[in-house]
Image (cartoon, rainbow, N blue to C red):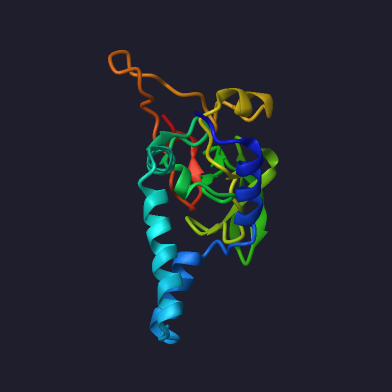
Length: 193
C-alpha cells in the first residue's frame, strides 16, 4: 500500500533541510567534536539506526544498484555509471585530416595547418617544423553528460560520422563494439576505425 501523499510530501520537505554531506558530517563530528552527553549520543544512535533501516529498504537498494550499474554511452562509447556521470564526464576529442595545408614559414620552418574533420575550419592545429604540433589550447570537440538515449544525440544532430558515431553492434552479442577515444592529444582520421 503506497504511503499517503501528504506524509510523503511532508517528509520530502523535511529532507530538503538536511545537508547532503550528512554521513561525512557525522564522521567529522565523531573525529573533531566528540559527542559526550547521554542525550546527544541517543540522538545520534537513533539517527544512525533510522539511516540503516532506510538503507535496508528494497527501494533504496534498487536505487543504489541503478546508480552503480554499468551503462554504455551512445555518444562517446565509454562505459559509465550514473554515480560517475557529470557535466564533464563525456569527452570526445577532435579528429584531424592527415592532409595538411601549407600556411607559410616561421623562422625558416614550414608551417602546415591540419583542419578538423568534425568541426571544419573552426578548429585547426598547426605543425611548425617537422612533428611540432601547436595543440596546447585544443579543447574537446564535445564535453558533457554521458547518455544512453540515442534520440537525444540525434535530436542535437551530434552524430557526424567522424568522432561522434552511432553504435556498431556485434552480430552475436548485440553489444556495441566501438571504444571510447580517451586522448587529449590530436587524433588523426587514420586512427578512427
